[in-house]
Image (cartoon, rainbow, N blue to C red; front, top):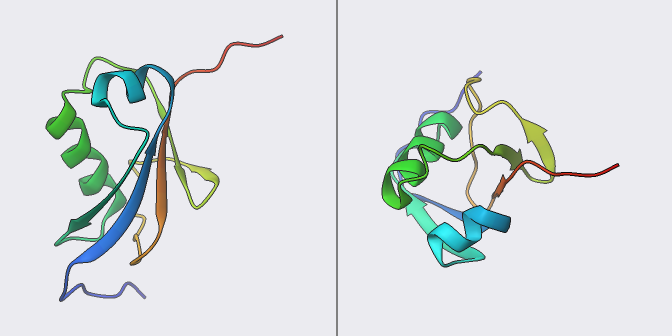
Length: 87
């Protein structure tokens, strides 16, 4: 069962690679008056104009699909991860 949100939640957001360069931040703590991950991601994309960048989302160190109906809790950590190269 999903919890309805009545108050703001505070979320720790981390940015890596080109996303950190675009936002000029590596980490920020910010509040939202909604708790759906998809809305939070969309809000950050709009705030920093990240629409042209590719990235994955990590919620509390677990890769997630930001399009899924995921509820974020107060104090959670969301990370914006650019594509990684490796071999």
